[in-house]
Amino acid sequence: MTQAVRSMPEQEGASPRAGRQTVWWTAIVPFALVLSALLALPSQTITSKYVNDLFVFLDGAHRIWSGQVPNVDFHTSLGALTFYIPAVGYGLSGSMGGAMPVGMAIVTLLFAAVAAAILGSRMHKALGLPLAAFLLLLVAAPANPGERIGDLTFAMFYNRLGWSSLGLLLVMYLPRLTSAGSKAVDAACASFLVLFMLYTKITYSVVELAFLVFLATDRRQIGWTALAFGMIAISVIAIELFWRGSLNYLADLRLAGENSGGLPALGALGYVFLNNFADLTVYAIAAGIFLVLAPSYRRLFFIGFCVLTGVLLIEQNFQRAGILTLGPSAAVITQSLLNGELSRLHRKARLVLSLLLAFLLVPAAISNASAVAIHARYAIAGQGEPMPLPEFSRIRLVETWSIGQYDYFVQYNRTLAEASDVLSQLGARQATVAVLDFVNPFSAGLALPPPIGDSVWYHWGRTLGPEYHPPAEEMFAHVDLILDPKWPIEIWTANGMRDIFAHYIARHYDKVRETTNWRIYRRNTGQRMALPAQQRQAAG
Image 1 (tube, rainbow, N blue to C red):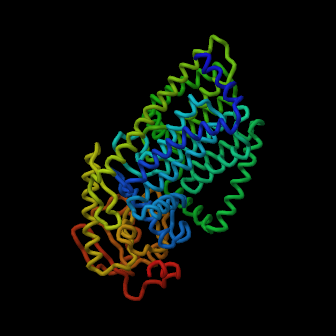
Image 2 (tube, helix red, strand yellow; image 1 turned 30 degrees about the horizontal axis):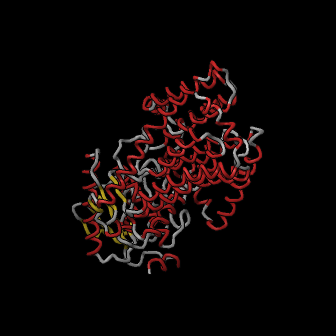
Image 3 (cartoon, one colour; image 1 turned 180 degrees about the vertical axis):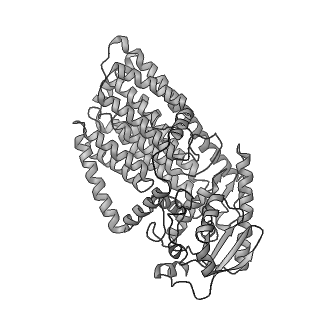
């Protein structure tokens, strides 16, 4: 390392706090603005796979704009923010096609502000700015981590937010540089990250809370961590006073846990290690160098925490590759050595660590940057096949590398078009509809009033199963029409729902139409329960 780089701690530590933060804000925020503009301005959604996942979020956004509240009017084991993000995007863009891009553009700007505050108070620009770019690209990219460049999707976007949120929190392992940041800002940033994931995908929030407990054992960090815990507790109470859905949220999480919970099998963990062998090997080298040069049990625990939680998180995600705690952790390791006073013999290790860090950050950053650029190009050009439901006309299916996926979803779109025609023939403009499948795209896609008491996401073995599932009397209490697909998007879910709800459907519904792709049932006359005032108003 050069003398200029080695002197960075002293130079930056001596700079005034305001001036230092200005430099970080002027570097990070414009980058985030560019990413946000590329997502939001075309106001179209481009996808090449996992269309059914996208429909889950849009159904939730439609329900919110119809007056419903997550975990109060409908079941979901995903946090409420998973649906408020696209709901805000829908409100600002005026179309379902703009819901996810605009919503994620706003989230990108929020994360940029947090990144500037955290990284700017703890890292050198030479390390912090590349890490900020890596984390913001992860938030903005319409792609599932670890998949091929060009596989565009907003599916499971909560995992990208979780990885990025956790990555920012891991940086807080580093003590603040001299005259940089404040305890109140640190506490506000940490509490924001934990709360954001608590109401988006709770598994990441649990990991973040555990990490905050670890940080609280450091006397240098105890002040702001205690303040952060207080902010989190007060915020949870305040949110519940307005939301009134926390107990239902926990009940829905428990139901999901009963269907999909349990410790991961050794075989599954083995696949995670094999699929991520290169990244784990590089990280092990970086961690080994760090521990040899600066050994301590606390540093060993930090490294073990990053590896263990990363492996457990990716194992429970729908994600093959990309343990995204490793890159931020390697950046923390490198920064720690830059802050340290090492012998001249060991200074070359800093250059080695920088190269290892680049191996962990650059490929994923390039992939995510490509996803943002490709999505913007397709959206501006209006390429792809529009979804057949009127409200989804600004959502386009494009063919990239996943030819099989494209053909699969083209066929799925044909079934949606047929169902739309049949619903029109049945005069179902104000009818509530349920689908015995992974998701119900018709309420949002046809601007129908959504049911109350059902769920936005059905996944056999994840959110429901033969023994643990919401009661039919609750799920279908306010449903006029049930659509049973012959060619479902998720065969195991459709078959399972058909089996466990068959008796209820036979007693309360009559089959009124059968087509090539659907069986459609209408509730028996006079059996529908009275709608609550909130639903009547939304339907009217």
